Image (cartoon, rainbow, N blue to C red; front, side, top):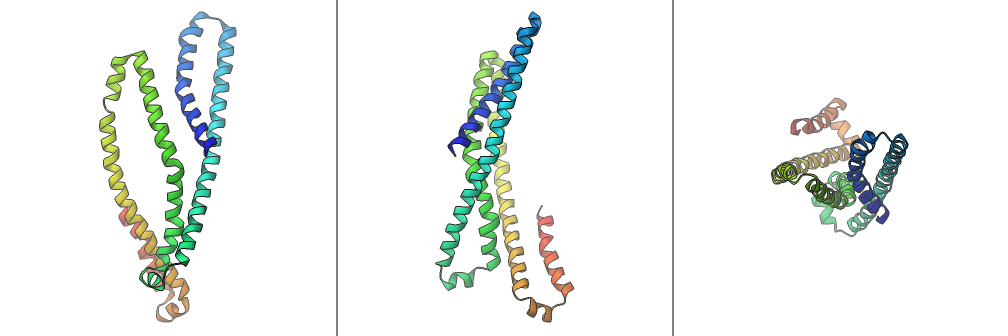
Length: 215
């Protein structure tokens, strides 16, 4: 986790420093006509870009590996917890809902546990550093640019609440679909005696189209 977080911070800093380096090459070295230093500068920029690509690879690979490990540990702990619950709990909750909680929901929780704190810290750090750099270049333009940030924060929070409600409905639909599949598969002999195969497929198709109607 320390390696992943450190590489993410370094990659964010390089993304801020790279435009400044390019600006220095274009404004200072190119007009001077010193092609030797221009070649060295271009090689240095290429090296910075390659190093940034390596850092992004580490963040992507080890970060997702960390998320998978978190998800695996949480799934094992949840399964141990479920085994200790009473029979009344299983009578009041459908098996498909429990399977959905232990698969789809835990996958999203693992992604948030990995990406959430890291992305939040990097976003705040990048915003603060970019604002400081822009202030050092032209404070009037910097203030004009960053004056819309409160509006962007408000819009992000507003639409995130709406998306959270839609995601909750989507997860509920997925749980209902898994419950329907579990009931049909576990009782396939009885279901085939009472309903035709076309009827079973029609029920699952109607449950599956809920995702299209909700979207």
